[in-house]
Amino acid sequence: MSIEAATLRTTAAPAPGRSRRRRSRAASAGLHATLALASLVAVFPVFWVVVVSFKPNAKAVETTPTLFQDATWQNYADVLSGDKGAFLQWFGNSVVIAAATTVLGVTLAATTAYAASRFRFPGRGKLLLAFLLVQMFPFAVLIVPLYNILLSMGLQGSAPGLVLVYCSTAIPFCTYMLKGYFDGIPQEIDEAGRVDGLAPFGVFWRLVLPLARPGLAVTAFYAFITAWSEVAFASAFLSADDGSKTLAVGLQVFVQQNRAEWGHLSAASVMVAIPAVIVFYLVQKFLVSGLSSGSVKG
Image (cartoon, rainbow, N blue to C red; front, side, top):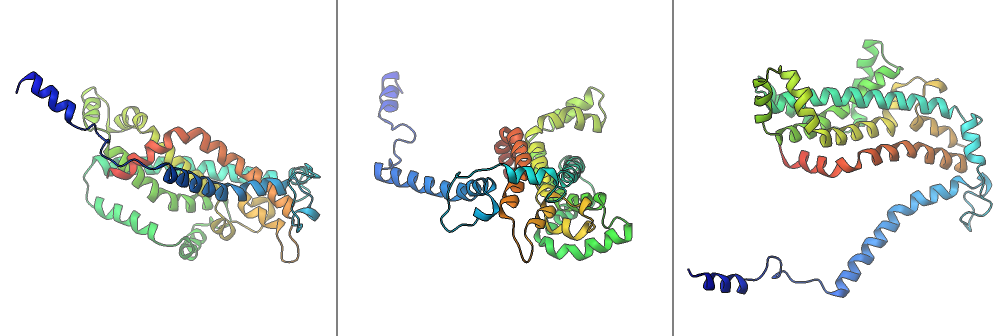
């Protein structure tokens, strides 16, 4: 074929995507309006919690709601001062439990996922199937057997027992996510590390883990949120002592059978959400790549 004919054929061919029908202005406006409305519906409850947190309890549920009229910081002062529960102690308990769950859960999930991705050993398929089956059961069904296990181990009512419970629910999901991510890392990297004299754990620690930072960020965020915002396990496995509660359980003191302190509850809820927002901000750049890589490879 001559150069002139090839040029003519290339010019006549439609550019990729040109054949796709363009969206009309009305359809585009409708789509954006729908997305804007959905965003408002999603954001409004959070916005209103912030508004109520600055209101006195007497005006928190008034029939003609106002925004920031008579705004006050008193709700935050009462919660932080300890007059309305041991909030700071609950905060410390939640930080310790969430941090321990994140570190232990991600460590065990990463080593398990790397072994399942790189090695072929008896029971490998059954192990992954067991992780998948665990995710199918509602957490409420697991409370009684987990309670009996912790009771037999002498860990019922303690923070270490709750950490183990959270790890048992977070590790299966984290393992599946990280296995998919490790499968996407070429095995030639492992071979090159072994040629350079690295042991299998050295290959994992020095070569593979740095490449898997997006996947680690996703699983760490999931493990942290699992421990930070969970209520059912914390209520069942921690002692009734007020000083051992986590934030999610401690907030229940603001809503009793005969009274509800909506202003204090909203102020405490805003402060509970701040650490989760900070953690999300720190790992957000890894979330999209980590989720996509861990979900399509496996």
